[in-house]
Image (cartoon, rainbow, N blue to C red; front, side, top):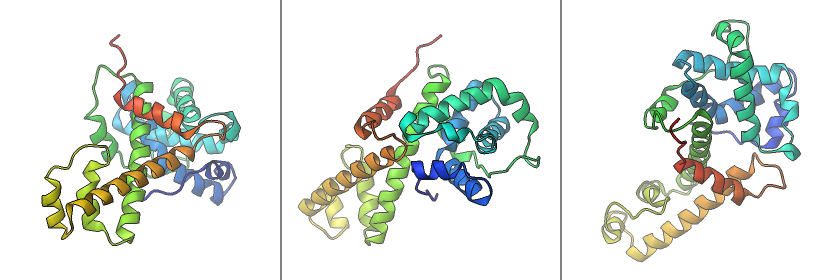
Length: 239
């Protein structure tokens, strides 16, 4: 999976008409379509209809110029997108359902397999669509930070070390004793623990940077990150 950098400058560029705006919209979709997709799935849409609704929402944002209201000073992009997704479901879903792939709408490829696999692991009756959107958004942010960290480690020639240490990024202990892991990498236990500490610090930095990309200046990345981490454990009450 390839992630493009998604900043407010990209959101602003997605408003532009023509190929430049379409390219930026495609990058936005590639980064953030899964939270919208699982939102629609939890609302009851089928796999195909959720894909059509998701594609229709992003296409409509471009065609109608609604991204003009997504200003850095007016709030968080995830909040803006979640609100748009709800509005599209409530007021545009009948029209979206008729705009199947192959219609006149701007078509942007989606592969729901990853989203479906993730959705299958989520509780069916204890999480409302908005909570699921927040949870998938949080996972997306984490996935993007891990992907960037992996690219950095591969570029530095530390593929095997990253494969070993990736499991400890969330604070969990390694699956094998440190000494055993160190021997497998022809290293020492002390050196490997230092490497793990540095990797976790770099991961936290990348996570904060990823969060910061869709925030207005007045919102602290730490506050947003805490909200997203909370969303990972949040369960909506049974109705």
